[in-house]
Image (cartoon, rainbow, N blue to C red; front, side, top):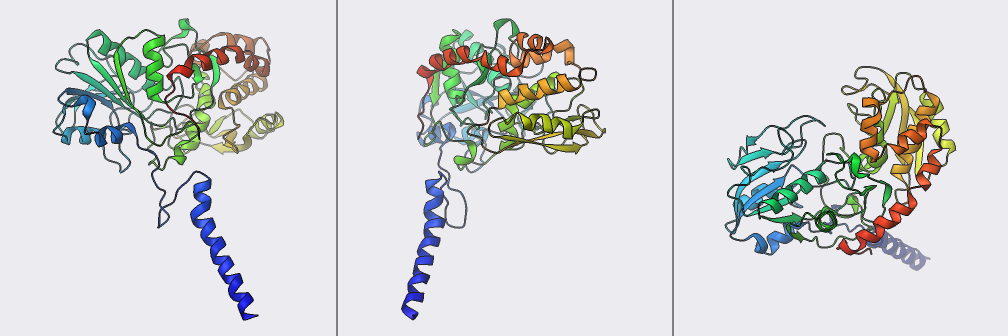
Length: 423
C-alpha cells in the first residue's frame, strides 16, 4: 500500500513537471525559471548589433524611430546606435505621436532635440510628412525602427514609404530593422485601396490587413510602387508567420496612445472604421479604445443582440456603458457594445467592423452621422463604393464577398516579398 502511494506521488510529480515545463513549449511559449517568458525572437536592432552594425558601419545615420524602437531588454535604438563607435548617429526623425509616443492622434509633432544625446529630432508629422533635403543633409543612410500594428491606415507605414522616397531622391541607402507583425503574418483581409483614395492613412493599393512585417512591406513598396531606393532589411531571428506578438516573448510597448494592448490591436483593423462617424465613439478616452463602441443614443443591449445573432467567427458582443474622458462624446454617458475576441485565429476584424457599421446605420439612420460627409470612412476603407452600397441597402455580407478576388490577387503579389515561413 505504501509503495502504491509512493508511485502515485511520483506520477503526480512527473505530470506536474510535464505541465510546467513541456506544455508551454508545445503551445509555442517557452518559460524560464521563475515564470518569466523567454524571448524567442530577435528583432532587427538586436540582429544588427550582434553583427557589429556591419551594413551601416562607418556611415552617418538618420534614425526614424519612436518609443517602440527598443531591444528585448527595453533599451532604446537611439541609445544603442549613439553608444556605438561603429556608426555615427547624426539625426532622429519622429512619426505621428512623436518620439515618446505621447501625442494624440492627429496632433502635430514639433521638431526638437533629444535630451540625452543632444541630437536634432525632425518631425515627420508637422509641417512636412516627408524628410526634406535640409533634414537629410550630412546623412548617408536612413534607418527605420518602429513597431507597426499590421494595418494599412496606421500612419507609421506611410512615414516609412515617404522616407524611402526621400532617400531614393537624395541617393541615400534605406535600412529597415524588422519587427513582428503583432497580429500575425498570415491573415489578409479587406478591400484594396483605390488610388484616388490615397492619403496618409493609406498611400498604396494594399488591403486593410496585409499580413506582412514592415520589412516585407518595404520590399513590396520598393518594387511594386517603383520607389527604387537602395533597400536592405535586417531580418528577425526566430519569428514565424503564425506568431502573434505574445508568442515572441518580447516586451509589449503600446505603439500609440489608443492601442494600449494587443487586444486593442487585434480588433483595430475593423473597429477603426467607427472613426468614420462624427458622433459614435470608438472608445477613445476610455481604458478600452477600439474595444468599446457607443453613443448616448445607442441601445447597447439591442445592438449587441443584433450582432450576436450574426454568429461571426471568433468574436462575441456584449452591452456596455462608458463615459469617454476625451475625443467624441467626451463627458457623455454612452451605451454600446464591447467587442471581445474569443478565437483570434478565425476572427475577421475587417469584416466584423463592417457588420458593426451596417448595424449602426440600419438601427439609427436619423442619428448616425458620417464625419466629413463620409470622406474619412472612405479613406480608411480605401474606397467610396462600400459607403454608397451600405447607404443603398446592400448587405455587408455581399460587400465582403466582393473583396475575395482582389485579396487573392494581393496574396499572389505579396508572396515574392515574404521573408519568413510559418511553423
